[in-house]
Length: 214
Image (cartoon, rainbow, N blue to C red):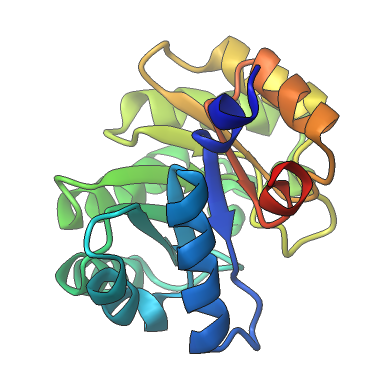
């Protein structure tokens, strides 16, 4: 793949707790200059970023991040506020406790509630693969297939591990064709990025590829 083709699949990301507006603005400038798919930023900066970016790249933010165990009502409210602030894409973290209890209908209901709050935006579902068994990952593919979400995403990047080749291959195998796969967390080389894309990832969540490819 060309450099431009890889960068077009990147959600240029800055979600660290200490992120400042100056850092977010620099991130946006880089995303615009290199034509990435989006900038993925904390919710508190969405309104300011949307005004600054003016549609030159998509604004992505996170919901229930990073632990996923806020209430469904809180996640829905976060989604509504993000949409009102100008977010184009939302990456929500599932409730992993529900997964461990095998409460699949509850997980689906929560995704659908968030989907209803952002009907015209791209919705990605973060399942935190490093904390799940293979069976749970497969079942989460089935849950996301039944939902109205657009993507299934590997990781927050804030847990014990990030995306792996094996997980991306598994998610692509068990997800419907309409459900795209996002690999995120720990993508640190161009070779890794190319491998994730070859295995079926459609998006890459990373802060490093612009520096490596720019």
